[in-house]
Image (cartoon, rainbow, N blue to C red; front, side):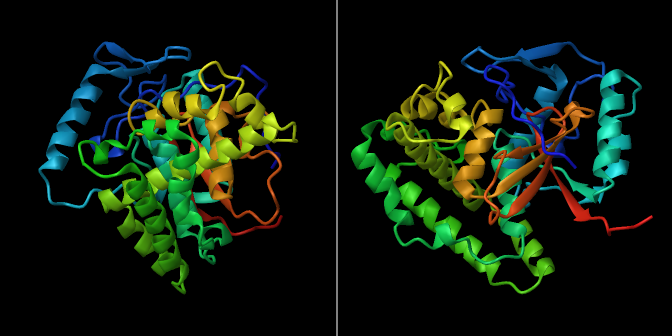
Length: 352
């Protein structure tokens, strides 16, 4: 399996303005060949900054999501962020029934992935998708608590950075925390402490099954789950500041960080915060270049099967391109670089 090559400057796909509808709604994305294709007119949904491609969704899909959110707000049932696993080829057959070029590409991609993994878990798409899929995979792996989470200075980071960079006060908390009168420093410190606490408790579990069950339970607790995303976003900002400062000093930096700050909308960490990180969970997800930043923030290699790139060197893309050998690996599936699902159950190795 060859690693994907890194796209050239200016070739980064757009951010997710509105990722696939939540899987609970039962709605399918409108790409050619996808089940439930056709139907009502499409509605273009754009990010506030219109420098990238559009994401089109059916009007009835948007209404279904609105109804779902209303229902969920009034429901006492736990909301599952990661769907139960199902056979990966059964999922493919259900989602991609047509014979269009797009559907054929998806089927071939899934067939290739099924040689390595037998099942898939669908991830709720609410613009936290990349964070959710990556963090869930990382935390559910049987492993010791990462050393960077053991750093006693971790929870002091928000106060330290905000005292040095006053523009961080423009941080926009996730939708789940809007309207709550909580000090920004306290909220992020609380989120970082929660990330360490939950990851540590998972690391103490002796079996993969127990850890998986505990992780499933964590990702049904909305307030805790979304606090984890605030923590990861802040870690991403911290890494961005470090990389930017190193670049300004003339030190060698990873190539992706050059691209990250070459964009008109993120020429420095302040712009990155205002125009990109603040949008995550609100109007957009992570762009491809920001997947590298996510990998550096959680110090995990993120390997993605990009199904739309089947037959090219980018079919399996690794973030970062040359990861440190001691970084754990998480594997995701992306159909369109906007939404990420999780492959599970590695196939047993067979020999001819």
